[in-house]
Amino acid sequence: MTKVYEKSPAFFDTFTRKPSMQKTTHYCPGCGHGTLNKIIADLIAELGIQDQTIFVGPVGCGVFIYYYYESASVSAPHGRASAVATGVSRANPDSVTISYQGDGDLAAIGTSNAIHAANRGENMIVFFVNNNIYGMTGGQLAPTTLIDQTSTTSPSGRSILNDGFPLRMAEMVAGLEAPVLSARVAVNTPKNVRQAIKVIRKGLEAQRDKKGYAFIEVLSQCPTNWKKDPKEACEWIDDVVCQQYPLGVMKDIVEEHPSQKRKCERVEFDAIAEQLNLTTSDENGFQPIELIEDEVRFKFAGFGGQGILSLGMMVSQLSMERHMEVTWLPSYGPEMRGGVANCSVVVSKEAIGSPVVDQPNVLVALNRPSLEKFGPLVPEDGLIIYNSSLVDTVPENLKGKVYALPATDLASEAGNVKAANVVVLGFVAQKTGMFSQADLETFLAETFKKPALLELNLKAVKAGWSAAE
Image 1: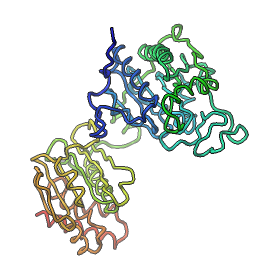
Image 2 (image 1 turned 90 degrees about the vertical axis):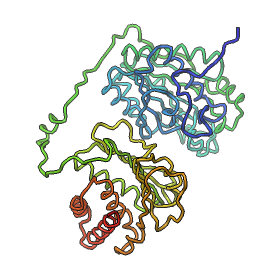
Image 3 (image 1 turned 30 degrees about the horizontal axis):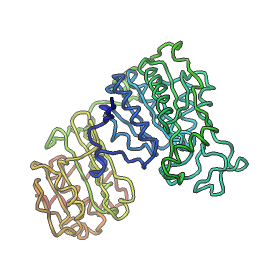
């Protein structure tokens, strides 16, 4: 009977990173990451640990794993996944914590984080994907690059004299006392995949049973950066890579190792405030904000250079000072330099579940591309505020209540076009009722210490407030 291979129930039904990629991952054709992702997903579902699992994602080829696994996920700075996973594991002792890292991420910038997490025997499983190269950033020399292997930064091949020997991380981890499992597997052939499944299952079971630290190095083919077709890349692992990195289990004391569970105390904020000699009373007389909804989700968008991120930060700071729960999530990348930059701000009376704003209650669009992109996402009871100084055409498919604000013109009249974001701040404060004029003036006085700058911004915020009346 032919076995039917289906998408694992541990994956999302559709992957939402890009509309054109809802059924596939972002990995290059022939890459081993996709195979490893499938193995992990199948075993999570089989072991019934999906609701306990927390992924810590890297900066590297596996950066988008949170789009794929229907489990909790945390993104970590480059090289810091093992450190972040330590915090996740200790704060959530009942979780199955998975740190998913590449060779540049773990064995280069993150070596100390990884080794010390292993040496402490943290309750986590680390998947170390070794493709001998920096994959995501263009194929540079990595700590795992083979002797004489070429890369964009070693065009003549890796030299022992100049670059040292490749790091055998599985052996290094096995030499430590605390880890319970250290192994190296590959995902290039059916035989190796079958063996990998056995080892990965044991590692996940060790996490389920709180046995301590497990480390699984995975040899993964990288046709794109190796400049080979997928078949050649798979064969190269067996013929060449395994000579430097032999497959096998280097250490396995899972069975005899007792379960361990570190103490995790939940400290109330009042206790922390008392230790720091802080007061939780409202000495300034601030009252919680009266929101138009229990949770207001803002999207501030425009060209890079219009003060979009600063505008979001100002709203966030004002809200925090009035004892609200707040998140501020900026966009990063080349779009911030002249393209569409944006940030999401969530202000809530309760703890915030996600900083991502897909359907804003309030949209501020300072240019036409922003209005066209985000305007249709605002629901009927939402507010859309656009910069009519720069936007002369409003899309017909907008559902929210639309306000035209000549922010750039009003800022120019106040003394500087760069104050357009402060004009918007005044307009938003008046329309939402979140802050009074006195609140804004006090905040600006604390923010701008130079008298000339303060005078300019006070004029700008008053202009925005008056335009909203």
